[in-house]
Image (tube, rainbow, N blue to C red; front, side, top):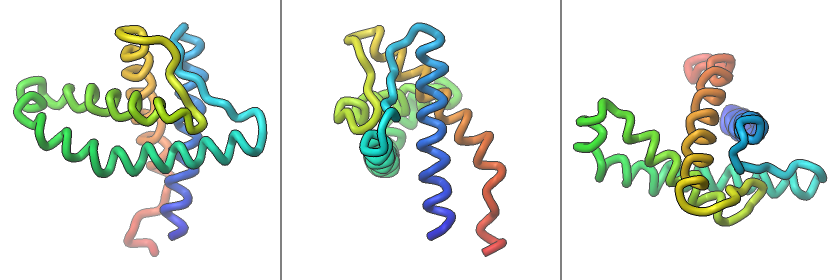
Length: 131
């Protein structure tokens, strides 16, 4: 249970950092952590994102497996971006402003950043065999 909470906090931190980097790049992926209530809302949004990634994301990755094989796995980044864009539409702590290509580009860059940051920081979490 402790590891699940640590991963949840890590993902929330990754979303916040990705938001700041995206905004520095001029993209419209925004996170609101100005108050305690908005931070709680962010954690709920991260839980929704995790749930969508674990269910719908896995299904989409399975259905697009041939396309992922052709692109050497890069199409999974597009699926991650679509899941992030869909989760951001609920506006639970994070949102993507704009429409069309601009919004998808923001979701794509944010999804890549979140994956990268989460992967790098996930190295510091203890392994399952340590528990």
